[in-house]
Length: 491
Image (cartoon, rainbow, N blue to C red; front, side, top):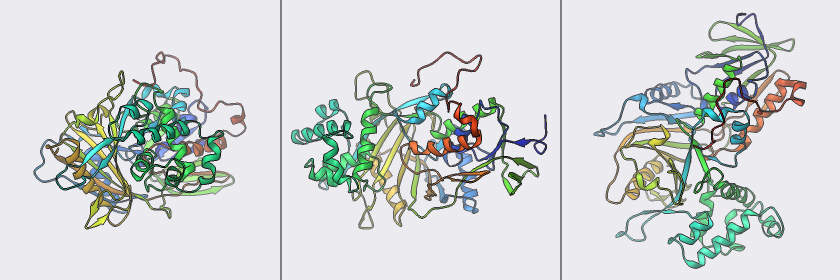
């Protein structure tokens, strides 16, 4: 075998984040000479999943100034908490994004045959937090009805509100055609709440239900984007089974997909080197000459990397908490024949929490994961809380955590065993390209996977493949010899 330095690589990919890893998957049958590096000792980049020990090492590296889009990391093990298991019993995800069933990502995993290596679990109900109306009452979590059956069966809204919800759900499913198109187009760039109030006569509570389903981090989503998000949710319902619209990859979310994609790249002949980064690089006569931190110097026709420099938009603050309870009431199927969900989403609308006398400016979303996700031991759960960054963001997330635990099981507050908090800065959202260099944009901080993440991967693939891209089928592969027979995508 030629040495690293003696080989003219077709492409050197730096980083094993989701986009770089999907590119490796797309190139895995191309017979290209691929060198895939990562300065980290782990796979996944900004979509990685950590054991407790790995999380501590990552936090130390961020604190030392090597964080890229991450900052302000802290780890807390509450005094007196008992029941935390060994480090490897946990797999805490940096990007716990749910994936809607209609996502193009799932279609690509199926057509590339990579789906066999990923186990998907159902995302269950969406809840909304309701503060007590007076001090004698307890806060509560109310399930958001998002199907015809749930609207009919819910007791959380009035008969009049049910009629309005049914009218809106029917409208959204066909919103891109006449006569619905003429109704919302004048409101396209206005807030979705304006449409809900003016055209559907919904009160503030019903508007909050609808906006929550969009998973908007600021609660101010436009009509155009909001209708697309709601339709994606509704049209995804029941695709892989009754009672759920989204799925979640077991063992750490998008990190698992990144690792599966890298394994496909390795099987296709790519060379992998973790713990190896880029020291210097220069372009010489159309080739990129790269000096690695390992001391090797390599040459490549194309160099692909990710942009981890902060952008100018507001980032997010996250709190990951391990709690000593299975939180069983959250993970119940609501439709006959539905699988037991492993993930449930709860939302605290803007203004529903108060820190130091100030109402919360942005919504807080809490994604609860049961031990079925493989992210924690049995009889425990992992909670991922997210809000837009602000001066009060960390205090707001901690308040939301305490409030949620007090509401989910009345009269019994589960014990918090571990906390990981950090800021994720918003990055650039445009890919950059020239003759021999391609730069992926920084990953999105959305709560559900956006198919826009896939577009730069396709762009990079076409650039590397050149004229061969015209004849090749992107992300569509036949089974390798000895591959298993088809399994269901959902298990």
